[in-house]
Image 1 (spheres, rainbow, N blue to C red):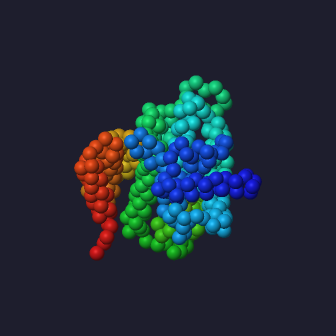
Image 2 (image 1 turned 30 degrees about the vertical axis):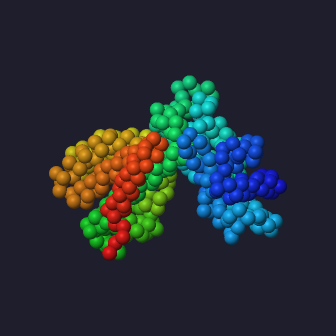
Image 3 (image 1 turned 135 degrees about the vertical axis):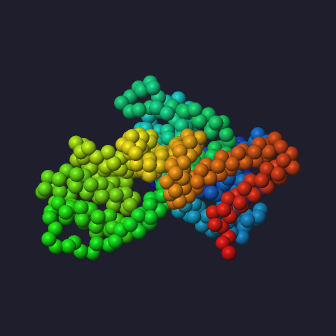
Length: 453
C-alpha cells in the first residue's frame, strides 16, 4: 500500500472520529457511508484498533467513540475546533497505528463465516484471498494463521467440509453452529467468538499444567545420575543412558537430555537394538515437546513408532500414540488428537493409571470442540479410576476440569439472560441480570485466588 493511499485512509478515519467527537461521541451507520473507501471498511478497522465500539440498540446500529479515540484529541475533547497542527498529529498517529494493526483471531473468524455464508462454499485459498483483498494492510492474515483459524472453526463445528468438492482443494460450508453466530449482532458475535478463543487457551493451559504436575510428581522417583559407572556392558549402558535422559528432562536440563538420548540412539543403532532406538527417539520427542516444538516432537514420535513397528510392546505404543495426540492437541488438530488418544487407550491394556490419563486427554479434546457433555462423561470415567487408585493429584486435576465446564456453561447462561434483558426486559430485569453476572464473575475470581490476603 502506498503512503499516499494510507494517508488518504487515515484522513477519512480522522473525519469519522471527529464527527463522533462533535456529535455526542457517536456516529450512526448511515453517516459512515460517506467516509467509506471502495473494497475497505474503515469502520471495521477503527473498531479493531479500539477507537470505536459498535452498539445495537432498539434495532438501530451506531458506533460509539471509545476512550482511546477520544484521547487522540487531547484537551480538545468537547465541541471545540481542531487546529491544523493537531489534526496533522492525529493523522500521523493513525498512520502509525494502522501500520501495526493486527486483526484479532475472533474478528478473522467472523469474517470467514460471513464470506462462506455469502458464497455458500469456499476453499482455503479463496478464503485467504478474500481476507487479504478486503483488509490488505492488516497483520494477522498470514496463510499459516488463517489456516489455523479455519481449523479451529472446523473443530468447533462452525464450518465443515463441503461434500461437493469443485476444485483440488477441500471446500468449506457453514456448519450447524454458524447460523447462531451469524444471527447475532456483530458485537455479540465477536464476544461469543472471543470466548471460544479464551476457552481454547484455558484448555491448553490445563494440558500444560497436567504435564508440569506429572513431571513434579515423578521427579521424586529419581536420583540424579551425574556419572555412569565403569565396567558396564553396552546393553546395560543403553538403559542407564535412558534413565539419565529422563532425569535431565525432569530437571529441565533439555540440552543435556537431548545429548544423552542422541548417544543412546547411536549406541542402539550400533548394537542393532530396535527397542533402545525407539525409546531414545521417544525421549527426544519428549524434549522437543517440553520446549513447545510440537511439530519437531511429532516427527520424533513418528520415527519412534516406525522403528518399534515389529516390537510387541503395547505400553510403548500406547505412550507414542498418547504423545502424538498431545502434539496434535497443541497444534490445534484436535480431530487427529482424538484419533491418537483412542489408539493409545486401545494399547493401554490393564494399566489403569495410563487409562485414566488418556481418558482425561480425550476429555480435553471434546472440551475444545465445544462438546462439553462428551468431555464431562470422559472426565467422570477418568475420575472414577483415579479415585479407585487413590491418586490424589489425578483426582484434583479432573475435578478442576469438571469445574471449568460448569463455570463455562453457567457464564454462557448468565450472559444470555443479560442480553435478553437488555433487548426486551424492564429496567429492573436489566439490573437483576447484570448484578447476577457480576456476582458470578466475582465469585469465580475469588475461587481462582484473587485478592489474596
